[in-house]
Length: 328
Ligand code: PBG
Image (tube, rainbow, N blue to C red; front, top):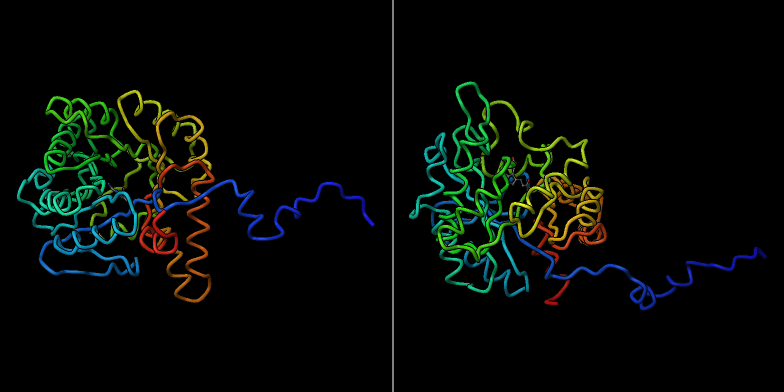
């Protein structure tokens, strides 16, 4: 007989015992569902590279929001999918009060006021260049010319009823600039969820398909972060918090759990993680082939985000996970 005094397996003997020693819990209250909106009425289009994720017209996205809220999901993040004819160099459509995006925010807040609506601040869904910032004649993405566009867009979204604006553009100084604009317009109660550590990633592919928002030239490497870096993430977080961010985010999620861990230890504000489109697509594709179990894989991934230190998770799995988790 070997003399083994300490036997970790004793604590894993039964499910009830395992539940007693479990260090991390996942709740529906941790989940934020990203939603895509399109023009029209009664429209529901599946995104090819994201099976079972749809782009909804305004009426149907409102219906979807009611369902998500009924399931216990506390928040959604909205993205507009616009036709090419509405795009220009200055993202003018982003401030159109009668346009799709601002009208949708308004309708959701009217129909489900308790649901937290998070809006996207960046130029790419409205930009004829497909970049998050203003592109000059030399093809450079101009930081300081972009800031007023982002600030105007944020105020317009706040006016439409956004609870939280989420700048996803990675321009320097944008959190402070947006905070000032919101405060000066009477929206000191509207929060900022900053995509602080957003990396230049190939995992955004399906999202860009969905929005038809891929850059027309070049890539996003002069503003989104190099995926080889983690210290730089802390620098970005420090700046964003000092400029007034209420939440900071790490994106993508799965290959970046070390960044989530580092940021969560460093940050005094809640940390969000974005389980992005490419991560969803991989899980979905493998499970559709019968190569992995969809539900088990999904739950494992979501718990791992919590274990790494994320307080909230933006994920296309939110609705599926909510159905498994129940309301609490
Ligand atoms: C752009 C934006 C992107 C995503 C959210 N906002 C793509 C990009 O930076 O090109 C990606 C989200 C996802 O892949 O699920 N402002």
